[in-house]
Image 1 (cartoon, rainbow, N blue to C red):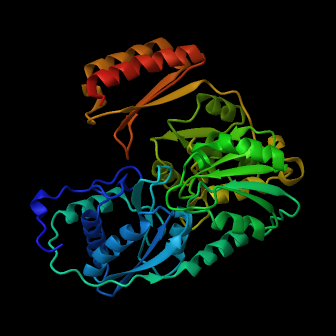
Image 2: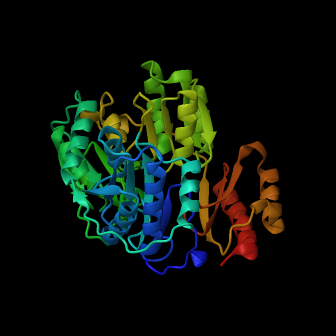
Image 3: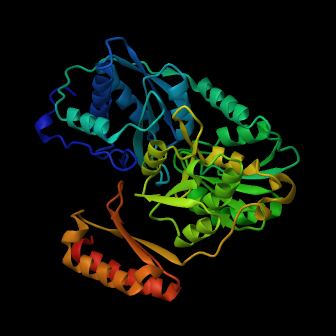
Length: 456
């Protein structure tokens, strides 16, 4: 980047789940990514002068190759080398960063976003997502860099390392025998396309593969965790005990039982909370979720004498609460489920969640519909409103007035969640109440106010 002008450079800002955007456009352009790679390298070199190795993986998007190259170029300027893991899931990359001699991990992924988007998630040597303070330092460093001639980089490929994660899951579930059971897996044409079928077959399952053929452009396209309804007919017709819907990078899972019922993160908490409590594996008789969790789940868990702690949206917030208080189980409604595996390591892996469910008594013989907990939910409607800016919502008079009026009418029988997306130019409006017509009316009122103030 000889001759680049840092004074006009736009500092990249990490959102709730890393850096994300349209591939090829800032902040997902080569210049910014080289700067991020170099800044990460500088940050890592504070731990000592020895050469550092950074593990990089991707979820199969067409843009992954040049993004990996740009990051590796930046890392090389700080005497850090890049190792390419290839097609993989985010949880697998996190585990391998932790268990192998790497000082950091980078997942090139936009998770559930369409193929034209991409992003990067940064992990420390313990396999945890890099904290806010560290990410802020890296952001600020990017604006201070001036490159001369960039070094030549040779990215070492070590795709075989993925096999270590297959072995890890086999060891975690060594007593799980899926012989004679049919399992449908939808990998969203993403990072788990090879990994998930391999693991399930290794445990004896007859696997029906759906959306396990990534071509760089079909990730999340009408498949995966965002579209579990597309798996219903396949699960029923194949006689499967369970259908597994993963997202693009494999860190979330939504499930379809043998009767075609869809089960999200709330269902997983409702099912596993009592099971883990009865087994003495639920510290404090408490589970963790987010403000998006359906109010009916709190009532169900209260009847089971289990407390529910709610955090801000984002699995990182769930993870923080679990680590701070020693809780063992947490989940987002969207399918991120976190388990404490000990030694300060949380597994947030759609495939791990699936195997945990498959290991429940009766699952293989009777099917998931007899095992997974179902409950009557409050109607809940979420609308994403495109916005042209993200001012403090309390500073928008019309929005504030609409929200306050709805909350006053709902009282304790419902709630409003109003927030910006951390990765997209969207304002998320969610209302939950006992009556569907009431929910739709209230959502419409707040959406209209948002559009009038900051809508595109």
